[in-house]
Amino acid sequence: MKNALAQTLRNPKLILIPMIADTIYFLLLFTIFAHLLTGEREPFGFNFDIQPLSPGLSMVISENILTMQMTEYIASQNGRTITLLSYLLGLLLIPTFLHGGFIGMMAAVTRSERAGFRVFLKSAVKFLPRLALVQIIFAAIVVLPTFFFLLGPDIGLIIYFIAFIFYIILRYIYMFWEYAIVFEDASVGEGEKFAMAAFRNRTTQTTPSILLIIAIHITAGLVLNATFSPIAVVIILPIYTYVAAVAQLNLFQNFTTIHLVENSVE
Image (tube, rainbow, N blue to C red; front, side, top):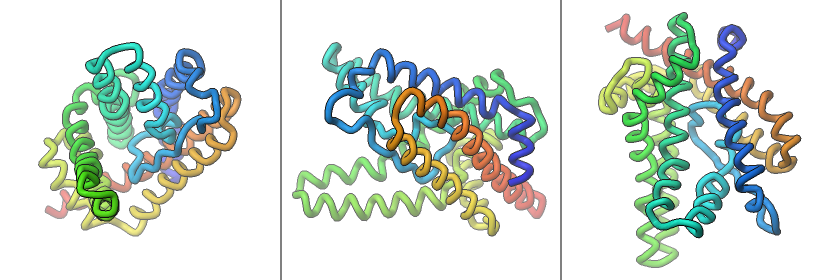
């Protein structure tokens, strides 16, 4: 953790770039889509993520605002095509773009290379298709079972619950999948093999590291939910981004340590 802390301080863009992305998001939320925050409806729901891949205060907010409410508004003004594009951008492409860029910067830092905007953009664009495919695979595990609700609410709920537990287990086992794809410039299939090997050789620090990230994610969500306002965002954003970036880099370095030791043995 000390190494991740020092590396993050030496590479401030690990904090700056996620903050810029969040700033754009919240500016849109408090201006163009400010009307969605009024009324009796809760301003947002909490989005629990088994493996947050990059710091993002906007990512602790569920799709309720970023895609569902915003998309409902866009859909009321436009047609189905725009609606589908909104879902695609909000749920998949934009988050995956940010994840790929941030992981690419962490890989550069781990290799003692410069981690700047150029590295972020190059990694974000290069790995977008591969990382998007991984996200689709995981999403399918949760989304497809919802069709069983057509057979009845009880059957649907049971199958969905089983699928969700299965998703949590798989997400934990393949926690390093995206890391492996970016770090090794691997295909989705090759990344799966690297991720499984790293999981089998995980250290005593691996699980605590991922639990720390989830704890930071949950804490940020609860605090933001309780204090939601432009002022609260301004105060919480830099603190969350810094702490989350350190925790993410710590987990990534745990992966690279396992992966490099594993390759040296081979």
